[in-house]
Amino acid sequence: MTSEQEHLVNVYGCVTAVIVLLVLLRNVYHALRVSFQACVGSHKRGIDTGVNFSDSNASAYVSQFRSKEFPYTLVICQTENPSDELYDWTDPERSHEHYNVTMDAKEILGEVRQGVFDTIKHWPPAHKQSMEEIKERWKEKGLVKKMGREARKAGSVWHL
Image 1 (cartoon, one colour):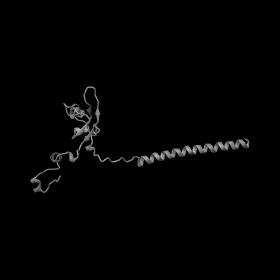
Image 2 (tube, one colour; image 1 turned 180 degrees about the horizontal axis):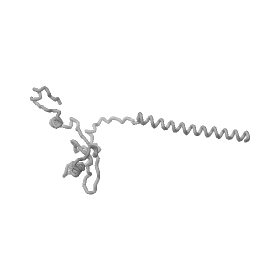
Image 3 (tube, helix red, strand yellow; image 1 turned 120 degrees about the vertical axis):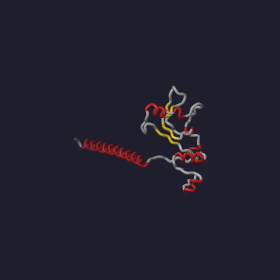
Image 4 (cartoon, helix red, strand yellow; image 1 turned 30 degrees about the vertical axis):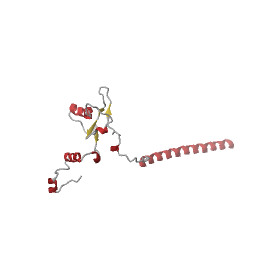
């Protein structure tokens, strides 16, 4: 091999080594960047508009299924204390519970395991409820056992 050929082989070798090194560094940088974003996150904080969700006209996400046999979508999740405000549709003749498929599944199968259907719970803010509704809900959950004079005598008054 002549000295010119040796020089050309050395130049090609160095250029190839530099290209491989650059590709390797690029891959390592990309892997580190993705790992860092996965650990720290890259979510940019939104701007607070000052409008509460309960005061807006937005509807909540309710798992639904469209069927050609029903005029409205079928609700495929368990609901607890549902509010008509959560749905983006209304049927003037029937309630939303009429379109709830989970009730039919319980009737047909007898027992439905926990976790088969999604569960939606709704707790409207206090300013949208009357005091009587709040007290009634607390009674249902067993939080208020005595009310009025009985509670004052027993010393177990809940102040709302």
